[in-house]
Image (cartoon, rainbow, N blue to C red):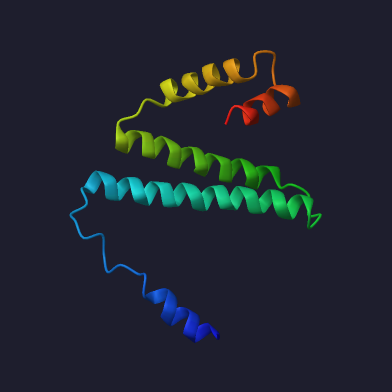
Length: 115
């Protein structure tokens, strides 16, 4: 199979659109989550290049990209009417249960065994 044949065969599974009306709120949520993914990718790329390409981690640029990532998280919370503080607190409570004495490999393995 060549690339053109793959493209044609893969195209058989495309949709022309969602097939329903999408509320503005949900369109904004999609925009924000795509932005979040993009910014998280930029953070990952900075770390990858810093470590594996041996460029060193550009801390000012990393802080900027982390800030952009946080902006998209806050924007998504605003759009969906979610309370960022409540999300942060719930996450910490979950981690306290999962790792009562801080992270340990044993607790992590127990968590995997429960699945």
